[in-house]
Structure formats: structure tokens, C-alpha cells
Image (cartoon, rainbow, N blue to C red; front, side, top):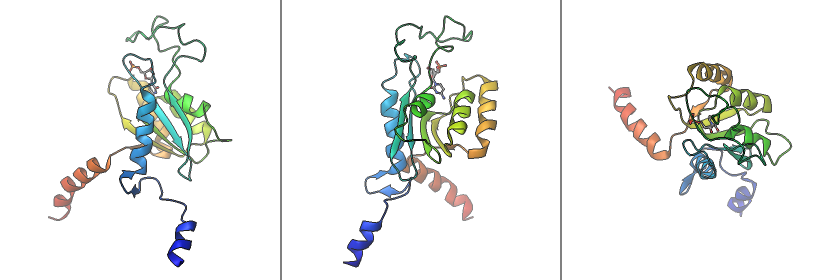
Length: 181
Ligand SMILES: Nc1ccn([C@H]2C[C@H](O)[C@@H](COP(=O)(O)O)O2)c(=O)n1
């Protein structure tokens, strides 16, 4: 009976705990990857998933053109980032996840995003009160100024790169021998 009562009080595992088959963080990053598939960007599909401190999803987004204007702007990429490219128009996945929030606010939440945030998204993340950033990849092609600005902006909330359980185990295996010399 005691066990049953304790289980009833258990708020559920914190992020990152392995819950049987699936680590919570792996679950949330896969939700972000799933929503990235909704993107119409032919070259870079990005997804973001915001999770509150109770482990509930409170925001989801992917990179897309402004609502109702999906067909009005080009998806062309390119160094010029001019008016004939997507860059001046596209709404980033993180911004959309924040705008799509289903809770009063996203203060204290974690955002899981399939790509390291740009500086504009870093500002939106900070201003929204999100406290943790977990990202999957850090594309090298991005503008170096934007990247450095994003790193500086986010340094206060230490973005962390997502590692699947398998990758974490492999990393540990590679580090342990050096630690035990
Ligand atoms: N943190 C980010 C960074 C980029 N995006 C979106 C914006 C564009 O649709 C695409 C980047 O285009 P690329 O230069 O890789 O062709 O990714 C985002 O949603 N969030």
C-alpha cells in the first residue's frame, strides 16, 4: 500500500531520466524533429518544442513564412540574404514555438530545438523567460556575427547539446579509460 501511495505522489521523472524505453529528453527532441518535417523550407527544416517544469509540452513550432502569407515569399537561400531570399521573411521555429504557447507564459521552461538558436531567437528565448536550451545541431554555415551574438546572449542559460542515450553511453566509454589511468 505504501508503495502505491508513493507512486501516486510521484510527479513523474525529471527531464532526461530514462523512463523505460525512452529518455524524456529524447522524446522531446523527437517531437521537435517531427514538427520540423512540417517546414516548407526545402533546404533547412527546423523544429522546436517547449516543455514546462512539470514535463508538459506547452509550445511547438517550425520554421515557416508568416501566417496567411505562406505563398507570398521565396524560399531561396543564399549569401546575399536579400529581398529575393527567405531570410527577411521566414519566422524561425523557436519564435513560432513561443508564439504558439498554450500556457500563460513559458517562464522557467526548457526549449528543445533541432538547431542552435540564432541571435534573434536567443533574444526571444531570453525575453520569454525560458531557462534552458537543448539543441541538436550547430550548422557551420551560419553568419559568424549572428552565431557569436547568440552564444553571448545564451551564455547566461548555458545551451546544452542533446545527446541520445546511445551517444551519451559511447561518450562515457571513450572518456572513462582516460579518467581511470
Ligand atoms: N535557430 C534557427 C535558425 C534557422 N532557422 C530557419 C530559418 C530558415 O528557414 C532556415 C535557415 O536557412 P539556411 O540558411 O540553413 O538555408 O532555418 C530556424 O528556424 N531557427
